[in-house]
Length: 141
Image (cartoon, rainbow, N blue to C red; front, side):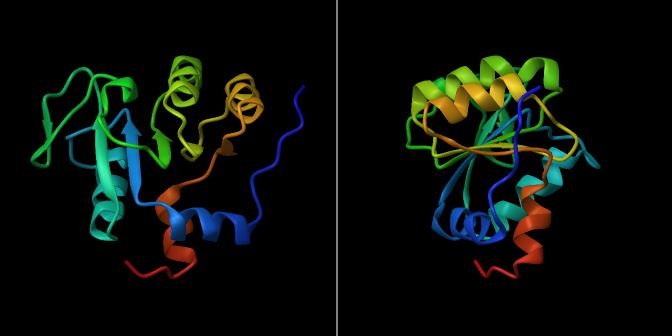
């Protein structure tokens, strides 16, 4: 079993303070879906959201991308709302695009993907809600 621990609170604060762009993989346009309201919160907090879901064309007025490989911008955080068994291809793509942070939302744990991304020099946050972290640190937009 891989030994893994999330970055320190101060490191997470730095990540959230220094980041501007978030690719949200598995975003939904359905009400009451975590990916919808978490992404809306982060967008309202001043982050640029790049929605990723091959089953959608538009999310809240934004073009939706089939993959993070299709996003024509630098990505600070890849925020993943996908079941653990579907995380590895996203991790591989995060490494390819040079994302600074690979963030698996609360309840999503995949040590193999985390190890791949960490080996590439990317920071990993796992089993943690980006919105909850942002709110708890009382970061302003």
